Image (cartoon, rainbow, N blue to C red; front, side, top):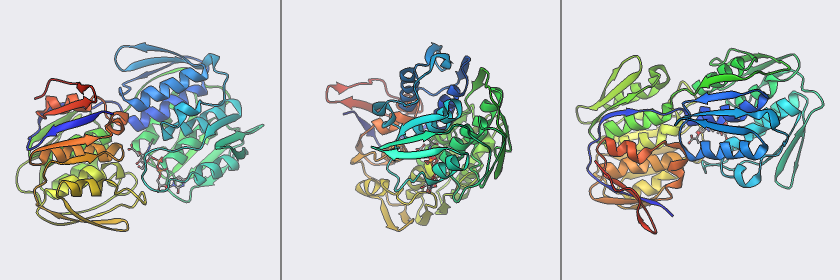
Length: 427
Ligand code: EPU
């Protein structure tokens, strides 16, 4: 098991290039099987989730060739299997996007019931309701979701909850259905727009992505395409929070500032200085931080994925702050770990009360999921003394070269395993 050892009281400063979006990449890769022609995906982040997704594709029979650091070519022409391998699928929730893409291409898919990060209950009722509306039969047997349809037919589907996953799965299946599909109350995240652009480049007709209603005219054949993944707004937001939390100054480069508006607004409200350029944002700590209320919402609201780093930032603001988690029922697993570091936080249902301004002290803590892991690393950088963060495999799932990027910004962070220290350079 690998751990991070993090030395505290470090101010992070400098520039960091933001990688391609994890949550786009893990949707675009399964979408590539909609065509039998060659697809080139550029700006893919080098993270475990993308490697797992590539392994699933190879296991299904897709030929994959790497071209440079962040580009791959996929040839899904030989793909014949409709059941991604359980051992790979269980590693990541997004593998359930093969339900939509394989159902679209072959009229059949068999995908294990998804797991994923423990953020509380994560039902998939909206996905299944949508597939049924398009005419698919669904059987759940022995832990597998088996979908089949002689013909998928376009339909009007109103989602009861705004779900990124359900929106993506239904975009995939509807893109290949006969006739028109209208998806209402859909997710509006930039990753949804990225997927729509990719599908359209492959010959689909998807309109309205980024609004509440997506209109899709199904097509029979999909062609090959070249597509570049959008920048990861959550990775960017994590470094922006790290700048303000550690009292430093960080420029996140190669970002789309529009995607980060909720985060820049919140950092300014908490007392950080933010300068926005066309493709970069600089966050600087200038004066004592002030407490604030933070509420997570679907895009364009403040993202739930930045709630854990946001909580760390608020522990540094003297006074009482309130965080309300509106997206997931159980996304406060990081609170107990932050308390080990001396944070004063009380959770009542979906609300966390933070008494900020109490200095944190280094401690052994455990990453409970991807974003809690990132938050604990930032907390450890601000704390007095040394921290040990276990279960770093969560962080590797979604942050491209996180510790190298932190080291370049001045962090002192070591990856250790039972065999000893794995990285020896630090800033
Ligand atoms: N929901 C339902 N029924 C459904 C689907 C969702 O009730 O059929 C509920 C969920 O329980 C949740 C809410 O709807 O309360 C939103 O869930 P959503 O489906 O939007 O989340 P997701 O697609 O499972 C994606 C990201 C998560 C991110 C959430 C929210 C990917 C691969 N995952 O998950 O990212 O937290 O949207 O923004 O895109 C992460 O990157 O660390 C991560 C967990």
